[in-house]
Image (cartoon, rainbow, N blue to C red; front, side, top):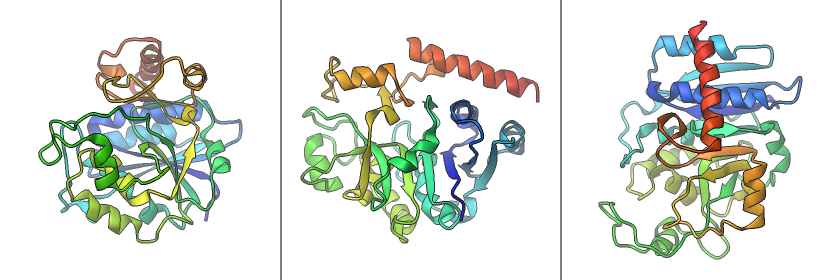
Length: 287
């Protein structure tokens, strides 16, 4: 088993370019001499995309492997809503595929930008917990809408009654998850795929919270600074000193909502992303 950190992104061909931006941002922030193994989970992504990824990221300090999940989940139907497609569920296969190969696997959404050395994360884990993640911003009391099953239900009641969060258990954001592969349930992937066929209002994030509640090591907000949040949903004090600090010293930036930085988002963080995207486009043009 390798002690090197696995970093996993899950995409279709439309998001591969943005995944490459995320991967490059990981490499840009590694300490000298640190090695990372990247994995792209996909279903039948095209060969040109695979070639580009291999050319860019099979280097002295990294390697990349494209894992086609089609043989495992090709016939499965998942709960897909709004802008969420089936790729959001690929992360549930990380423990099944990478257990025995790595001790820790870091899942990253393809709309994040890394600003710090992610190989520090395993040292921050409570080793008794199955996953490390950042708690989502606290919710205001509001009713779910635009959902075929749960429209009209109070969101906080939904968290308690449907997800099963109790006491001091907090919902975590599933865009950045550090899987402790030695500890997470051996049956996790089977349970995850079964739950992914059920209807949840917030798709993969609900599935992860449903299965992992009580087994979460909560990481500092700086490891998943969620940008452009909806103040009608999240009860956030913009003057909170720690939030301000994390915005000034982020370790991972998460472009949570639409528009994305490649699709018209304004602001300095969006400009930073577009600089990274332009660099990746330049590298791709030279292949």
